[in-house]
Length: 261
Image (tube, rainbow, N blue to C red; front, side, top):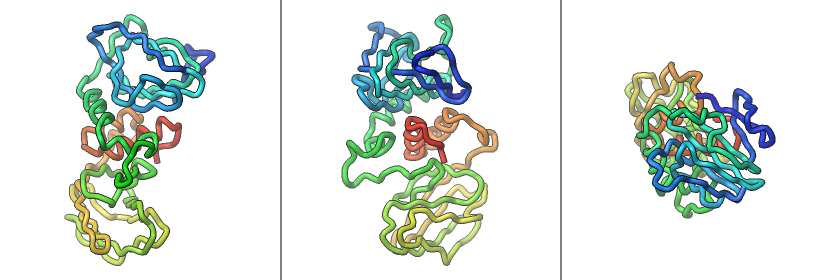
């Protein structure tokens, strides 16, 4: 499930690590009534026309994208593809025309629902359509937002707590099955607080006290089998773990060509 990169002038020649093709005014040539929908649009920017996050595409659809347009897709088999204009051709230039995508349609359905929902408004491409009260995504996929309670996906190592408002010092206390940590502080103007040995791999819940506010975080620990996972594999795991904001952050960083951390 590697990402692949294509030059717009040489759409059949792929590099091994990222997938880029040139793309324009987004016209979709789709067969009406097509039963298969083996791709979902994760993000679209520039003059991407009718391509909206959450849209489903058949594997034999064709795209025509103008200069400056960009679209990031996920295939049914878990690959993430980024196409950039100018481009006109198949959704997946690497796929054999006779091949049929394998994998779970359930993941694409979940992604489609997530990307069309309110939670996606302030993520992926920025807050252009977000309301003033929406919480923006953390800068990296492993930054753990403490601006609200809910599920969080964590990896081994120091816990990277993240807050949106860094206007003042804020005392922090952590409580989990492993014990209690006092004496921590979010310093003024600092959005990230790194805490070593904050939780053990057996802890599935973390209570974070920030001044008078309490956050209740349900933890999902990244399994060792995903230590070298592709972005697509991590996205599926985060989605299955209900870490929606981190999943949307991952999509946004892949679409922008940025490292995940």
